[in-house]
Amino acid sequence: MGLPSQSGARVMRRGKQVKRGRRSTVRRKRGISPPVVFVLLAILGGSGWLAISMMTGPSAATAGENTTATNSADDTRMSLPPAGGESMAANMPSMEELTEQMDAQAVTAPLPDPEPLAAAPETDRQTQSVPTTSSDARRAFDDMALAALIDQADGFVRQNQPVAARRVLNAPLVEGRLDNAQARVIRNRIAQLNESLVFSPRVDPMDPFSETYRIEPGDSLARIASKRELAVDWRFVQRINGIANARRIRAGQTLKLVRGPFHVRVDKSDYRADLFIGPPDLPEEWTYIRSFDVGLGESDSTPIGTFKVRTDSKLINPHWVNPRTGEEFMADDPMNPIGERWIGIEGVGADAVYEGYGLHGTIDPDSIGDQESMGCVRMDDESIAIVYEALVEGLSMVLIDP
Image (cartoon, rainbow, N blue to C red; front, side, top):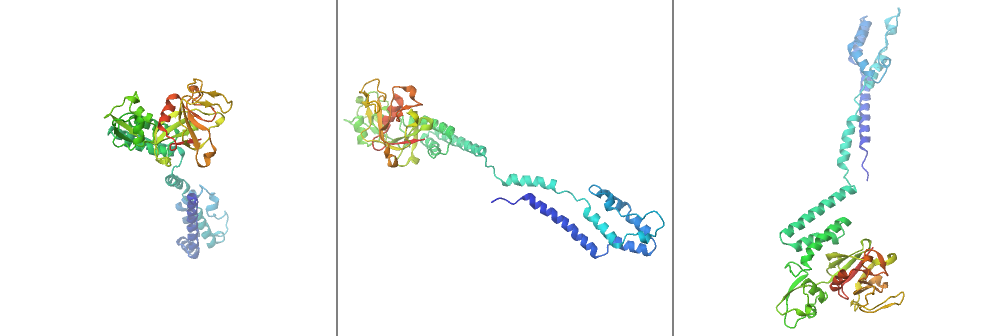
């Protein structure tokens, strides 16, 4: 609801001032003021011109000068008797005329103009009562809040609490409260933290996604992943522990395990795939891990929606048939367009109509960041290897956003 006009309120107050002047005029009409009494006495005493001279003395002349700022002197001064021998009584203004002339002086006397005085307070009140809502002001607050958030995270890092630092940085990211530039800054900082928290053998006791495992006799990485019910491929355990040969692990050796599950969120507008970890059905609780550049389908053919990694769909060095031409590419064929990894995905719910899509490698790295596939999401060899090891069939989600 709009505020009432403040300037209008002042105009009304000015009107009241004029009305008060007129009410005083009425009171003068009802009684006889002292100057009028003096005139009557002067007439009775035969001294009419004395009364006239006193009425038009210095004070009356001064009033006439004041009124000439806005009115003609002829409108406010009393008429003098004409030259000649006419009687003073005949030319003397009547009682009513004297009263009207005095009232005219009272009403038309210049009053201080209130507008210049009222303008400054009105501007001040409007400035104070109307909050600033420009996008620049909101953006400035966002940037200040982001800077404070980064300072808080850096404080946790200095205190050797990287998990707490990741947590405070992750919240505004997954909640979508950052613009593109701000989100890029936060992703980079979290990814740096995850180089140690996720992709190194170091285990932080505060990390809810990692744990320590001591290898037992007869163990293999695949057996450990199954025994500990990890929602990752055993090759991910090999990667984060820096194990060059998976067959050369030994009993008593300590390993770092990351439980998973991991998920991927593709941002088509930015040709980017983000890796997250967390419960499959609660994306708002996911924790960001890192990002990868991707290629997309020609003519914007990569579908938007919610997908899940399809069971029995993850393949290494796959055999592939081009669905358009029927051309067949055997395993180990260096000309196979889908590269060395394939992860099939299937639509969920209303998106179940989308079939045959997947995440895969490419033999054309220059196509990353462009639209050249048949609708699938392309990654370079290193990126698709990490994603392949992190995602699990039937559990990991793939969300594709516009």
